Amino acid sequence: MDKFLVSAATATILGFLFAGSAFAQTNDNYNKATINWQNSAGTRCYRIYYKESSSKTWQHAVRCKDLSANSYSYTIQYLKPNTLYTYDVAAVDYNNKEHLLGIKQMQTAPMH
Image 1: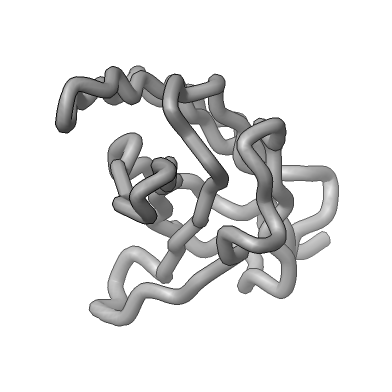
Image 2: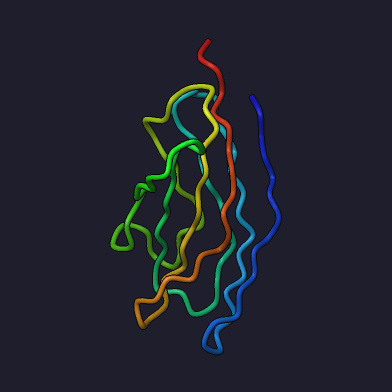
């Protein structure tokens, strides 16, 4: 099983500091991956976007109503085995503005 650690992304927007260290870790299961990140100050909730790296179309893994500011992890399911994915975690502030924590990549495990 491969694990990937990616660097922190930091953005200062409208006086808020949104700093997130996000990483993806593939699970023992070939068709899902868990994404973890650190808390971002001024966040109301999070959204997660992902896509196959070769695709141009982003999908929601989870929307704001389902991922509160106290959440620091989410498992994306129904992924293809042995596939490179691109994802981003968006911290949503109290004005409903998204602050992306930085695009990362993850590789799902091959099917056994």
